[in-house]
Image: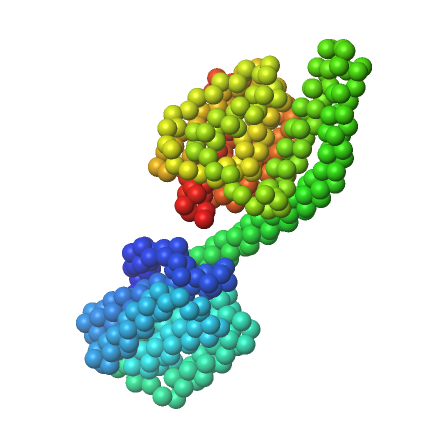
Length: 449
């Protein structure tokens, strides 16, 4: 088999991607084992096609008479093994510690049988044994690697004693030696090309596996951080409930005092104080509801348009001097759960735009392909390159983007929990744009039971 043929067949066999091999994987470890098995399947296809070409060239081109039927039966067995391996990858059972070892061992045995029919240990392609040893060292555990080494050593020793010699009719010793050296050269080049190609792929699988593990560890750390913040917020809400209720009662008693009843200015200030206390109580209640600790036990139902109108109205009520432009084409009357966490998410993004600082803020809400998309734009200074690169990470706050720390971190993670996501970018005309997206199905009453 020539190096060019190896590269050609490798490209053809690459249609079966690593993603397909990992479709039925049971965890990251099984996924990488399946990807490595796929590399062995590719290598076996190359071996089959390469051996067919080599056998035919040696038998008909160079005049060496080979047992074609027996050698082709070995190749047929390799094809059957490859088909079985592909079916094995489609099964959901995880690959065991012996699967890769068995694959390499069977390949070594098949190579030994082919060498037996073509000169035994004198065949220059015995250098291909090194390919199995190195792949074993990369893919297998220590015991399995040494087992492959022992198997190949036993096979090579067996080929010295037992083989079918090749008779070179009409060739001088010098010509036969030159053919042997040429075969050694081809074998070494094949070893080098195949090792570079497949070890590079295997290392890429390992890097992908490590990156996935790092991502999972980062997500676990972020979720642990969120849990701690949630416990802190829930505890604070419980602690604040009693003093806020006491303040509300005291302010209500002050309303009936002659001093406030006779002074309209003081009475108005007292009403403003009562309004702020009621707002604090509402925030505390929302925190407890988000933590699943609301006492009412009732799920508040609204419509998508009604929910968005309510979110905007509440934010405008506490910030009457802010220029907020609200546009929506929501007309659906589908009943949804008035998710308090989603309301807080939208408020957080609006607060970040306000603290940018921005003079004008624009919010648009649309539904596309059963997804709710909310875009919030402002005319502030925009995000810095560092803030954009670290968008959604905790404590990512800069002086040019005040409030862009934990607030946006919670925004990203709450949307992820709801099955959606968030993106941020700077507008070409200046300012920033934050896009929130989540599937309507996560809010519908019928699907949230």
